[in-house]
Image 1 (cartoon, rainbow, N blue to C red):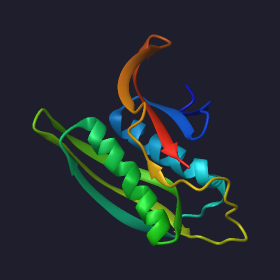
Image 2 (cartoon, rainbow, N blue to C red; image 1 turned 45 degrees about the vertical axis):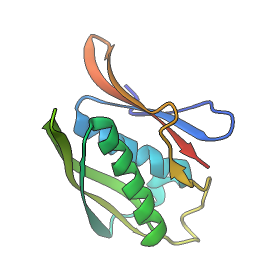
Image 3 (cartoon, one colour; image 1 turned 90 degrees about the vertical axis):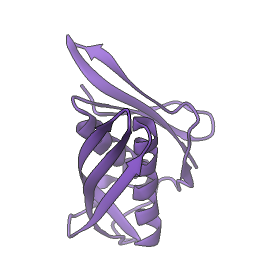
Image 4 (spheres, rainbow, N blue to C red; image 1 turned 180 degrees about the vertical axis):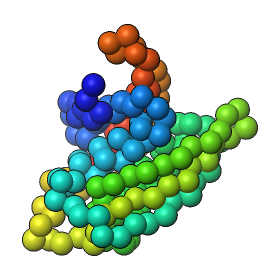
Amino acid sequence: MEPVEYLEHTADVKFRVRGRSLEELFESAGLALIGAMIDPSTVRVEESWPVEIEAESLEALLYEWLSEILYLFEVELAAFSEFEVALDGGPDGWSLSGRVGGERIDPERHLFETEVKAVTLHQFEIGREEVGGEEIWTAQVVLDV
């Protein structure tokens, strides 16, 4: 099972992520977002940034998680290659407590492939599917570039 798959899209970047748990799904989504902009294998983990988010739904939580990673990328001028999250929630809302690990952007090592403007809600979805007899979480995200 590949955790990240980039899909064809006419004008933007679209990806699908998979995880055996919701935490793995969210961590893979963070990696996919960064991977759309730079090669995460070039990013060393020298610092970490805490992330705390609350949202009314699981979909809103994933949207806010990705938006926060993009915000930190732009404001802190940092790239990330490590993502850790713990999720809690249900019908009354969801919360995420986590961190992103990486380093300040070095233009000589971190070559930009695409400039992502925003995470969108277009074709945004979270679901479950069976892969090889195992039920996994999936999400699809479109990034505005």
